[in-house]
Length: 121
Image 1 (cartoon, one colour):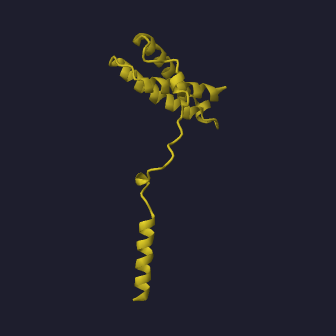
Image 2: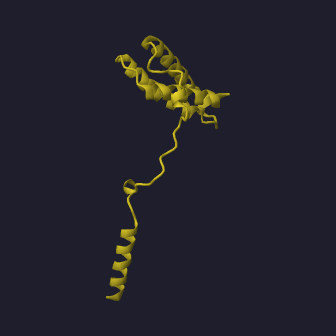
Image 3: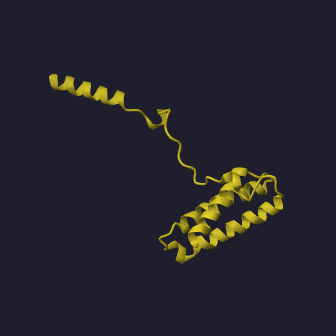
């Protein structure tokens, strides 16, 4: 009886002390992958045809890197950034095809491509 009472109170105290991760209000936000999104060379105000060609160029380069066995087997994170570039540029291209320039995906495409290039050299 005493053992059950102690176990129950320990369980109740432990359950009340823990919080679900999504209920914690003062957590630190995750670090941004690109701290210079505002400094992107691809901006919403540019001509859509120009943006399409730049995005496709970055996406094609990233696809070539992601399919290259040399970068797949590399210990550098080049393959990871090539994959991220493909996704971001693909989404930016999809928006551009519909006639809308999404500033976030344009900036991510530019930033992730720059990171990929940084790890290639």
